[in-house]
Length: 323
Ligand code: XMP
Image 1 (cartoon, protein in one colour):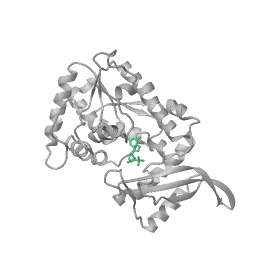
Image 2 (cartoon, protein in one colour):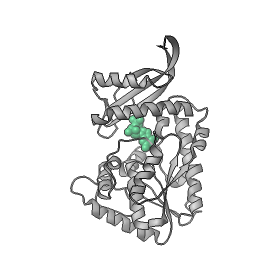
Image 3 (cartoon, rainbow, N blue to C red):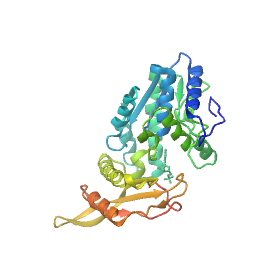
């Protein structure tokens, strides 16, 4: 459980300002004159942790954004800029080669996910922890993560184990989880209360393994570039739908098409747009036909892509992501 207990679980009527103050004080009390570290993904949970940590510790809070090569267009720079605007310095770590190397040749979904987890924790982040000498890690675990881990829905999120750190040997090392009593709506409320822009507080869910969850088959730079271009188009076209989540997926299959009078065996991109309350169940959004046609037109103008499909499958039986 978290180090600063609170009876609040978010929702209406919660005093987010006070909650933030309590967590800042708790971080300060625990870390004292020490150094803490956190990894910022740009998602709302790690963003709120970053603000709380910096309020509590100032320069003794070291925040890193790891560029794993799997981010959306301009995302690493955008996240660093958002925090610079808030007066918080975030160090961008270029780990693209490490992640692409770990993913090379892998096509099995679970192996791909494992390679990303291992590269992040066992290689990149554990190196940063050791280099900074930080003894405290601020992590954006929320109540739902704990519940889903206990229920066996989510993979183990025991951070110390994933870092390859034995807490007994590494005496004094602590993980602080200031958001562990909150659910997503509570974290979004807190995000606004601590001054994060709406683009962060209300950000659409984006998975930790990032665009790798949207590349079926091998994840290569070239295939990432294709799905990244499709993602930008989908996010631009569907921003005004108010849907829960929308995304583009690159399939491993190919299909024959015709371009400039020549037959080509091209790539296939799937567009997914869903309505959901919490991503446990979902249904496809009934997008207007004109919108679908516009998406199709733009996506099939990406070099090499000659088909665009819209996924109607609810969850279950499908999941939201493709790996
Ligand atoms: P699925 O694909 O399981 O996705 O139906 C449900 C929701 O969770 C997101 N998702 C993830 N989020 N790490 C995350 O932080 C992950 O590994 C991950 N996999 C899926 C997905 O985008 C959807 O909102």
